[in-house]
Image (tube, rainbow, N blue to C red; front, side, top):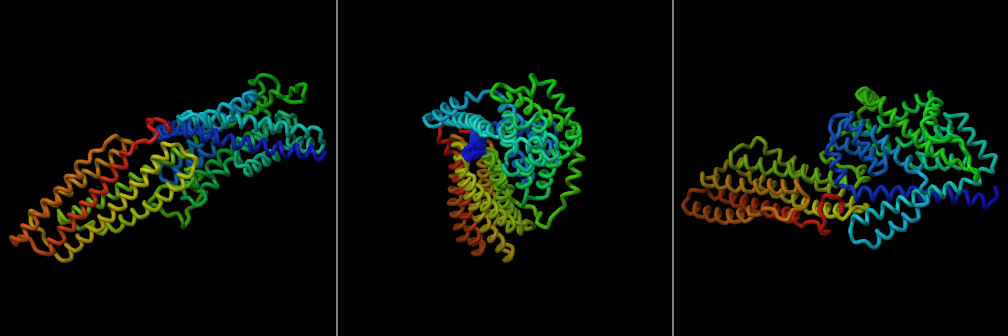
Amino acid sequence: MTSSQTFALFSGLFGGLGLFIFGMKLMSEGLQKSAGQGLKRILEKLTSNRVVGTIVGLAVTAVIQSSSATTVMVVGFVNAGLMNLTQSLSVVLGANLGTTITAQLIAFKISKLALPAVALGVGLRMFSKQHQRQYLGEILVGFGLVFLGMTTMKSGFVPLRESAEFRDMFVLFSSNPIMAVAAGALLTVVVQSSSATIGITIALASTGLIDFYGAAALVLGENIGTTITANLAAIGTNRPARQAAFGHFLFNFFGVVYMLVFLKLMIGAVDYFTPFSPDYVDASGAKPYIARHIANLHTAFNLINMVIFLPLLSYLAMVCEKVIKPKDSDKKKIVRLGDNIMSTPAIAVEQAKKEVLRMSEYTAEMVRINRKALVEGDFSKLKDIEKLEGYLDDFDHEISAFLVKLSKRNISEYSANSINKMHHIVHNLEKIGDYSENIYSCAKKVRKGKIEFSEDAVTELDEIFSVVERFFASTVKEYELTDSSESVDTEDEDTIDTMRKKFKKNHMKRLSSGSCSIDAGIVYVDVLNHLEKIGDHTFNIAQAITEGNPSGEEPAAEG
């Protein structure tokens, strides 16, 4: 090959591959932002039913156009304790089938629409003020770049048809399918995208450099290589998450092993059901029909794999549990968040919200324990306050760090608004925990000094504790039901302030009459002040909820 041909080869291959991968990323992100709320609703339908889990995995992957993103997300969910092992494996099976849609899209002869799609997409992205249209623009630009990248790669491979060395190398794949499987797996590990490597395979086959048999073996290898992404994401996670990633590898590895035995039979079946011969060569020397054959084989392989392994998920889970042993580092984390779910920002935002709600449960528990100690004289769980306060500190630190990282992603306006609210809510929950810890100190004084409140003081404490708990519970419930509300009932905040003032006056009267000791009075006033502060920070949470969506759009879809 001449130097100019070598340059054309490498620039065409790597330039086209770059366009393809960037196009897939752009299209996936646009789809995620456009359908973010829909993704959340799909995942909420997930049950322990393996068939439902498979359908969910297929649907989510079809939407975001990335099985790697889905499987990495599944590893994150297992790490967070939101999915069990069998459930996660069913989602991975569906994701394997869902990712074949990419190859089916590539096989369509619509490369002429690439530049018009880019032009229209750029126009929508740059000049439209509506977020949904901007996301549609990103999808169209990504779609166009995918096909533009495919065309560029095909053009780059054309000079290789004149090279005897390259022809002999690719012929080797047809005569040695195991080598082709290894090459496909290695290429996918390097590129970190099975869609991209399948695109390369289709480009090679369409150019005439490799026949259908060799391309089929490469595709099988690419299905093994794509499992590496999930296993890399599982590094540093807990044991169930590592088991889920290993299960993904086992699916595809065993599937490729038995498929190699029946590869010729499989190819014959695909040839029979797919129109036109994959070996037909047109006037330009290209094979115009082989792309559809490769796409159909990819789909058929994953469909057969899904049918075979779906009834065997429980047994496969047992194998994963036997192989992946516990580590010393497998300690249960209180906060169920991990960077591996950030690949799908809409889902990551929803998971962060669930963790904020879990944080609020610990916060409410601190208030309840203090009430039992001071009102009912039940000090049995008072020591739990220190543990709960430590949990709140962990939540505050980890959720805040997670949200900062997530905010740097390519996220929608709606997700950005939700993240901003969570920052405010988490900060105020942590402050409520601090004031609950102050009340805990007061309770310790009561127990240690055997301080007794008057009956009126106990009644008043019970009343103000009740309003504080009611206000907190109703505010959190409002946040749980919706990210944005026009109004949250904050009347209890005024009630708490009024109670504090009234009860302090009552306290002064009791001091004057001698019905309350000085020690009891000091503790009593401190508790009232701390409860008022809890009410203030609950009010701050209510304000964060009522900030609304700055874009003015309904939260039914991202944006």
